[in-house]
Image 1 (cartoon, rainbow, N blue to C red):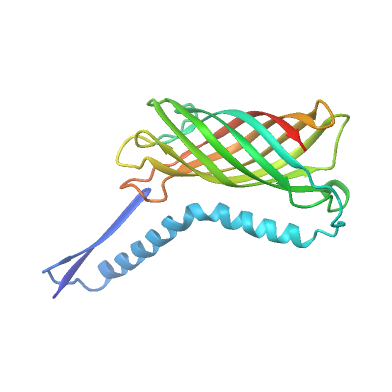
Image 2: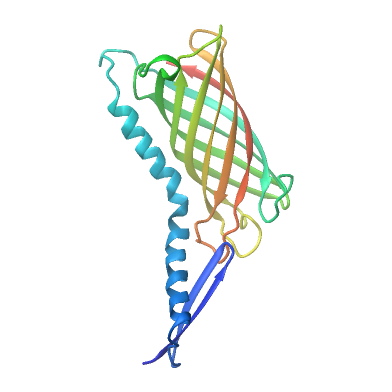
Length: 240
């Protein structure tokens, strides 16, 4: 049976359809449909890019680990809270505000590796996020998790202060669509940034972080607007 191809490319939501019972147009219309189909595939896998980057980073750094197998690699237990502000449908970072809190269990994957200012330790973590609260532009509640957190704890320090960088990816489920509209209650999250750790005792510390934060549904909903913002966090760590 003949088909007619229609191609519509929209910002943040690419749709391509073929309808039965009508003639298939030739030339530019079908070329446009092929381009839109390729864009659909790229858009669906775009949210996986941070996870692929994290896996490559782990493999590269872990391969460089030349420390003794007997060197102690500590566990890291922490609680944290974070506030973020960002944009969903406008270019204003004052559009949406979110407050989250959770717990993290981490484990050092390496001893100290690298040279000079690059010397440090790689840590893997898993986070549970029992509290997710959006205040504006509409109230929303949820919870989430981050199965992949990679943290580079630098060996550089000034008295009790040392820097770190961090990348993480996970998901969040809310009680209503996030953002509002024909979107989804299930979204993927990605964040990256850094901060400082302030040691209070030999095994306890505080950390202050600032990160870029991204939330989107990877086309699970009819529409896929994105939240992009800046997150500031405060955490308390206990190492064992």
